[in-house]
Amino acid sequence: MRRFAIMLGAAALALGATASDAKPRLTGEEELAQILKDRVPGKATDCISMFESRDMQVIDKTALVYRSGSTIWVNRPANPNNLDSDDILVTYLTGSQFCRLDRVQTVERNGHFITGFLMLGDFVPYRRTAQN
Image (cartoon, rainbow, N blue to C red):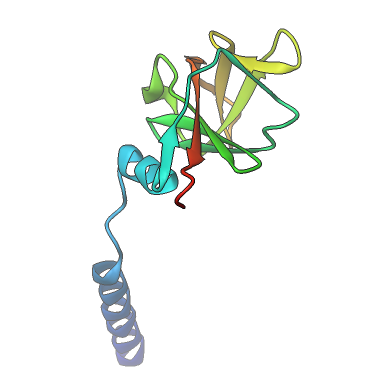
């Protein structure tokens, strides 16, 4: 019994050290700023091709980020509080593009419960400047 108590105490100390060494989690805006550093915004557009934007990332409670070649497209939905990187996004498209005002349903990954809806906003391209 004593050996078990010692092992339990050692495990608690190890976990405590790990927790105190952890980096603070970035806010959605801070994470987006890191992704877009050294880039400048271009003219917003209503739609982007879903075939050219293969890599999509959800920034919690902030934005959807699509990568297409060297361009990063940022979409800030009308209700970003429904954005959660743990959710599955179900997009209802009217064609072969992601467009402003397209409806996106968020679904819980484990239980497949509907957690919310998003209405897409404008797509803003971010590109590296000629100096970078």
